[in-house]
Length: 184
Image 1 (cartoon, one colour):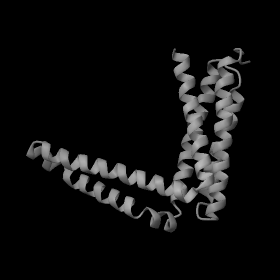
Image 2 (spheres, one colour):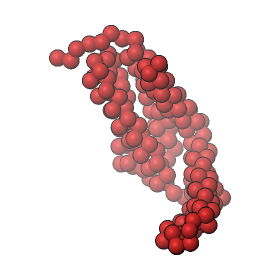
Image 3 (cartoon, one colour):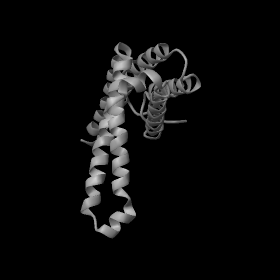
Image 4 (cartoon, helix red, strand yellow):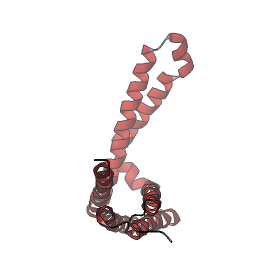
């Protein structure tokens, strides 16, 4: 059962990579607006909860925690992100850096999987290593030129996400079926 949970988690991540790649390929600005709006909604919820929490605390603790201030700032930021998502997408190319950070984090996770596969003496670790390298290369490309040719960068990132998702999915399936090997 544990083996099934492990591969299921990897396959879900692969499916998410492919889905994000396809959506990013077909409508990068719409997807980015959706991400900005989603983050805005998250800030609204966290801000509202923080402000509500303030009134539920002991007055002395509440004064020290500054929850009302933190909650109202988060709520204000959330409202701004929700209502100005179009403006943010059009005006601020650093949002592309978000994709770079996501690619870097994904690459680090895949690097962990590669090392785990080697230590567990599983086959097909090379494909996971390739996907990790590809994700890290995507991150480097984004970090080197986040302000140039936005559409080209989004297209490159979308194609790379789709490819790494497919490679990761194949690797996850084959690594579970493949024979164990010995590291020399």
